[in-house]
Length: 197
Image (cartoon, rainbow, N blue to C red; front, side):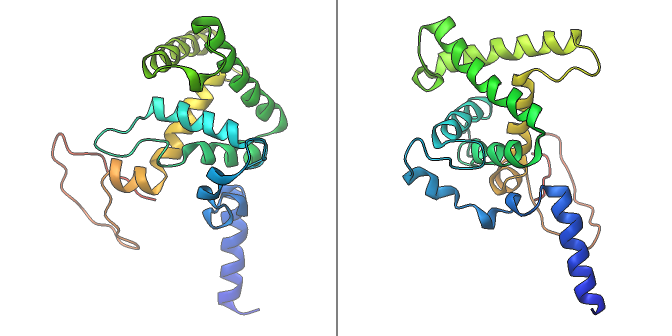
């Protein structure tokens, strides 16, 4: 084995362990193909197409399209499905799935609608604002070793997925590619933050 081959293999092992192995690499997932699959198809890991659609809609309410594309355009639901399926422990996966079920139940309880997808944009915002207040109260009173509130986990994944996507890193944030060197770039108050992917 030569030095180059050793470095390539080392990078693969280290990168794979840090990023949840090959499944996180976009080359393995045809994100757009999900739109043409039957509703009960297990689209990604543990998640059906319908669940991924729900996660995209929740994500898009949290980070909607403005002058830049929103979370749904960045396919954050698919990102969340990969992370939860491939990187979470079974207990955390169950908590996440139960959280999606609870979110759907809140739609029925608060608005007499069977699904988040049937809520108006205003109702979606109202629901998520209430869940955000609930998770903040929960986080304040929880014990150190207790798991986070399910909505806190959803929000964290939405932000992570969006700002590490190509759309988030290059359109919502400013992006200048400078591989391998340090470069000072002026920042003026009011400018968008810098991102990289």
